[in-house]
Image (cartoon, rainbow, N blue to C red; front, side, top):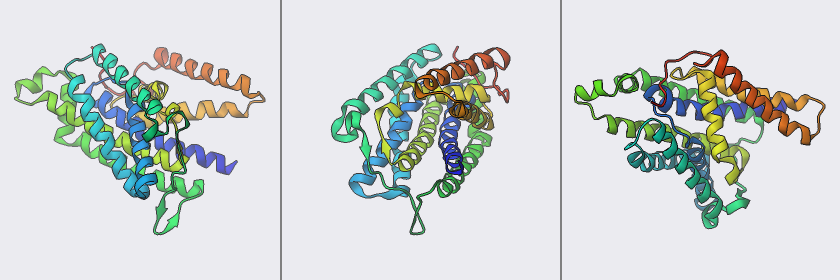
Length: 292
C-alpha cells in the first residue's frame, strides 16, 4: 500500500508541473489551447531517444526535453497566433492530432504503437533512483523548483504584462508592446516546462507509447487547470489532486476491471459537471481569461 501511495504522489508531481505550465498560457495570458498532451509527449520522447541512443541520462534528458518542448511550442505558436479565441482552440487541437499521428507512425524514432522501452532510471550522486520514495523526493523537488521559477515569472514585469494582455490586448499595444512576440515567448516557456514534465514521466515509467500523449491527456490537463482555478499556480495543483486521486480511489471498490473502467469515466465526468455549475472559476477562483 505504501508503494502504491508513493506512486500516486509521484504521478501528482509530474502532472502537477504539467498543469501549472498550461496555467501560464491559459490563466495568465488568456490563450486556450488543447495541445499540452502533445508537448508532454515531445519531452518524453526527446528524453527517451536521447537516453537510449546517446546515453544522456536523466539530467541530460530533462534539458533535451525542455529544449524540445520549447522549440516545438515556437513552431506551433508562430502560425497559430494569427488566430485567437475559439479558432486558437481549434488550431491547437489540430496540432495535437498531428503530434499524436507522428508518435504513432514515426516508427524509426518513436517505436510506433509499441513505443520505446528500457529508458534508464535517474541517477543522483552516482546512486540509481529505483524506489517510489526516492522518486518522490526527487520529483517533488523538481516540482517545487518549477513552481518557484514560474512564480518569479508571473510576479515579474513580464508576468504583469502577460496579465495585461489577458485583460485587454489593445492596452499593451497602445504602449508599444509587441503582443504577438510576448505570446510566442510564453508558448516557449510553457512548452519547456511541459517538456520537463514529459522527461520526468519517461524516466519514471521507463516506457513511453503514443496513447500516453493523445488528446485525452490534453483535455485531462486542461480540466486540472479549470477545476483548480486559472491564474493561480496553486489552483492547477489542487485540480491535479482532484482528478488523480478521485479515479484512483475507485480502485478500492469491490469491482472487476470491466466495471471499474466505465465507473472511472463516469466519476471523471461527474466531477467536471459539478465544477462547471458549482465552481465555474475553479476551487481557488482565479481570474484567468478564456476564449473570446
